[in-house]
Amino acid sequence: MNLPLHEKIRSEIEADILTGVRTPGSRLPTEHDLMQHYGCSRMTVSKALSALADGGLIERRKRAGSFVARPKAHSMMLDIPDLEQEIVQRGQRYRFELSERTILPPGTPQAREAGLADDGELLMIAGVHFADDVPLACESRLVCLSAVPEMASQPFRADSPGAWLLKHVPWTEAESRIASVAASAGIAAQLKLPAGAPCLFVERRTWRGNEGITQVRQHFVGSAYSLVARFGPAKRAADF
Amino acid sequence: MNLPLHEKIRSEIEADILTGVRTPGSRLPTEHDLMQHYGCSRMTVSKALSALADGGLIERRKRAGSFVARPKAHSMMLDIPDLEQEIVQRGQRYRFELSERTILPPGTPQAREAGLADDGELLMIAGVHFADDVPLACESRLVCLSAVPEMASQPFRADSPGAWLLKHVPWTEAESRIASVAASAGIAAQLKLPAGAPCLFVERRTWRGNEGITQVRQHFVGSAYSLVARFGPAKRAADF
DNA sequence: TCGCCGATAATGTATAGACATTAATTAACG
DNA sequence: CGTTAATTAATGTCTATACATTATCGGCGA
Image (cartoon, rainbow over all chains, first blue to last red; front, side, top):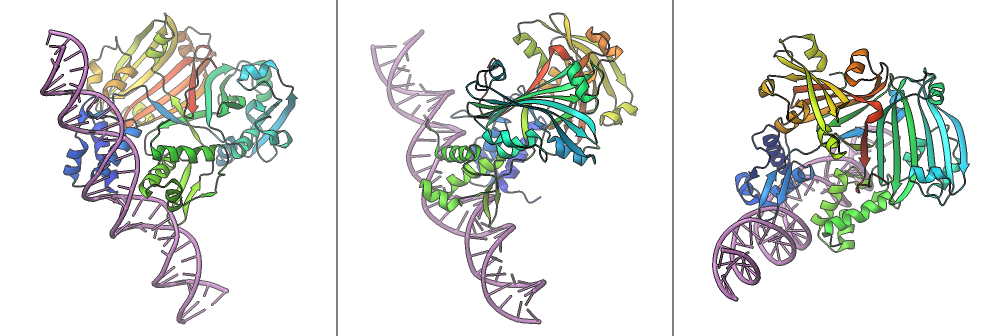
């Protein structure tokens, strides 16, 4: 354990908070006190406290001091899956099969509905993700061609549209809605499921600045797929 | 916009990366170059770059320099709902109804299965979350009593077990699995749904250090509930 | 040609001090 | 007594410098 000093200070205070030695709302020592306690400079202490503040563990107020934050509505990190990678890692063969590819003229109502600009052409693509020739998910995507003109000429053989976009288009903001739905007749047919089977439904919209880039709706076979979200420093082994 | 200098440097480089001016894998100027360009000290530049590295936007290598990170399997922030707050915000009345509360002796197989310590008593509680007397979700929870002895005597009238734990127990790590399942007969009865209706299923395990604290399995009524995950700085208005 | 090894260029950590900013406290005043 | 102004204690930013660490590069020798 040869941690740098600011890391050591950070982790000691963090431990005190997480184990309840320091309770929410309580004030912690001033930077000056800590710097005497650890025999180091103020910058070093400040760095440790700033890191804790960034992580939401403490709150710092000028003139008043630093306080242990009250546990708020918290968040976890959700790993957005790269389907291909995940399937290959399972030892299965990945395939994306394009089932539709249309260019919609400017001004279609679908653009508004998806939160995309309605003053340019939209590319509409749909397809199914297969693992070892078993359908795992299907998706339907709208792409703003004014934002990504190269998209229109992509074959999507090596990459699925999502993987291609991820690799080639920088974005600043995204929002996903995750729900559970019963497979409609059309979805059921694509996924070779009985109608009404439960599907994990993900709708994601992506922006660059204020410009909407793409919207995608994915249906995952409920029995075959799940998402994982984590909170915390260490990555726990999957089989534990 | 009176940002501190290190923030300004950070955001300028960030913008370059997000807009594609700096492409993944490309090297950015050395701290020395940047410090000349901005006419400031190296510490200030370093602080900006460290923040970018913390955010995963760049990768820093000694002797080699700093590089724009390749977009990896990325992550989004998933807001873990405080059900009560969410329901009240919708203008509905919240109620949690306890349906079961059992103490399991040490060594039950369920402890192992849930990844909890099997050398102490477990509290098993189950109940249903109501919004305006309509069931919205049901949950079944195991709590390690050796970690949280006070839990056994809680009435769970004001708070649901989850809200109580969140308020009173510090934890360091959590993992959620999110899936879509068909309601079993038992679940369907609790949620007043037809059997087989799609439910959003969340299984969460929580640790303090290496000590498992609790495991919970929640079934949400699919047609009434969804989760939202976000990536990006600004919070977009919900109705947009 | 290959491998080792030292020089070097970059980041990583830390110091001691300066001044800015902010808000809680206290003092002065009407 | 209440309001306003000054003080002051804390964090926030920044500088200039020093030394540590480490991966890369280039050269030297077998």
